[in-house]
Image (cartoon, rainbow, N blue to C red):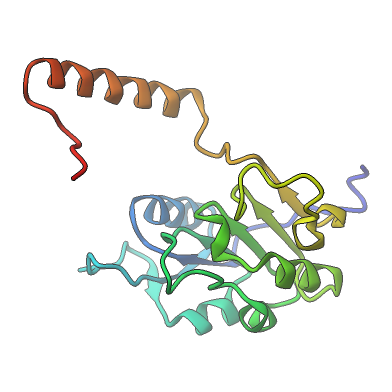
Length: 188
């Protein structure tokens, strides 16, 4: 690995596209804005967005893919979002753009992503989620394992010490509430 081969990219002035403005997407928008990025967002949810966060421009999905220097996915997996990022959408992206998926694996067509990266139609990708976790032995993940411009992590973006502490605190509070006869977070 040599820094000269992989120069750093300055974020100030670039465009961050965020698909899904829930709690996490909104937090990403705030960080991107703090770094000097212009933020575009697409939000389609059962819970309508009353007002976008300050400095966030709401746009149509195809416009977001065409204008963004980085696209960060924060949407649930539904029939509508399965393969949301396909060959057509990847072709809309700038060849200097990056795709980041920390939402759900099947939102991205891995074969189409591998083809785009191999052909130089996309600068890079970062994936913390895959369609099958862990991947099946021998699965080349759409050719992504051979790509120097694709970073794959094992669904650990949530695993900071602070996040684990919150998880344990919520679990302990839920158990205490259950024992006291007032369960919370009930799934029906």
